[in-house]
Image (cartoon, rainbow, N blue to C red; front, side, top):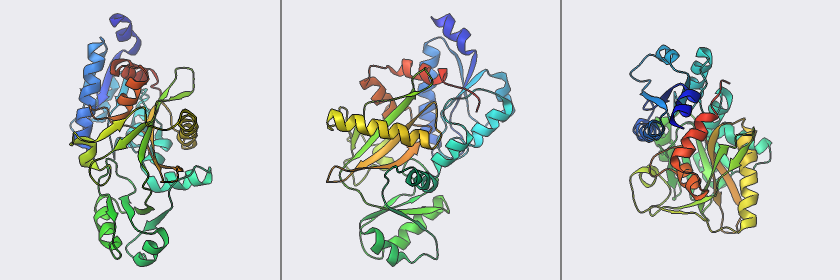
Length: 311
């Protein structure tokens, strides 16, 4: 088996680190993936594009992208790999770029009748009071092009939107305000099924012990609860899994990814955002959901690597 995997995949670069605000998370993710691949006999090597020229990737047969955020998850790296004609994991240039941009993802979803929380684009000249009134309080403010909850804040009091906008704008000039949906946070992992389609993994409910599922809750705290089974009825879970696949495909995603959604108190679900290069750390959600479906971390990384292609 070890020889066959080595022959099947050739020399593999695991991209980790990078230059985004999520560098540390990417280093953890990539190290876990690298260890799992090497443990199965794959000729895998860590490659940090912050420190090495991209043309060095020409020495590799395929690439496992474990970069998060800008220059890794937003279509830049995908475009470079297509120019080099090296197969890579995950979504292509267009889907990566759209998936990274929460505003444009929501515009596309809305056009495809995928339900997402109400939102407004916020700029320095916005009427902050009018946006607060339209969306209601509390509301969330977030940079459109950052992940891991970087720059996100919850506005609870009137007049608080402007300060939240200024915080988010430090991370990205494109900022959105989003209606608060408070009945629970959930995620659906999606992986290629090896037959040209995708499988939605069991849904996970996330129960943070702080105010919302922020950077600290995602990566640093050990008291965030992850419920799988998620507590939804089988019928509801299947319905949301199918809609998550539609939301994933609507953006043109492939390979693997994650679709996050919220539930309100009445039991209506709202798709929140896409993640085209999810985390693969010990706190990460896709490996957790895969495990619940009987797929080990080692089997998961091989399955993702199998789906690598160019464009």
